[in-house]
Length: 241
Image 1 (cartoon, helix red, strand yellow):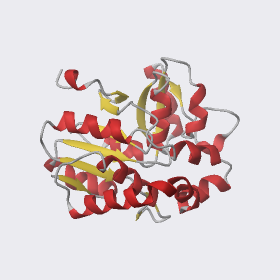
Image 2: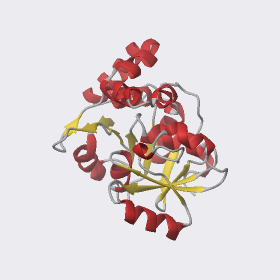
Image 3: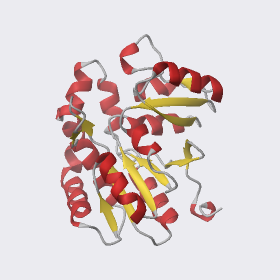
């Protein structure tokens, strides 16, 4: 059975019941991961909000530090477009308010991070990691100013894209996400541009990030969290190694 639940509370509810978790944060953590992994970069997720602690951790790891998007100035940040120039084979500490927070809450449960760019690859890796066990999809969503969850259509569609490559029995929530994506796929670029999160990014000058996030099935890398860092999941013959 494949289930879908939203945000941190959803991840915590699914964690003891599934063999693998898939976090979906399309704008922008999942897309940033995909862009970074395409350059053979090892990505360390980190909690958002404490820039001093992030700098210290990056230094301890010997990793580059992604600065807040607002920093500008051509620095690497959560903006996927900014990561296209990362040095090949480097390491990056990537603070984020949603994707990193959820990734770090998975405990010992295997965790993948997906988006629209790598939906098929993530579905394949999830199936291999689960080895016939249940899979949990977690659309990250956004947060309202009071900290409560704001469901985000882009993450729902991203989860649906991954689910469209899985033929296991689906919970009603997962089934509707899959069907919603399949109906919306021809208009995915417009939908990401017009949704609340897309409009926020475009209004702040990050339209390229929205375009990168809307690219369907352009990547064969499935980000897999191991030993505190995301790297591409290996092929199926090595999954159990």
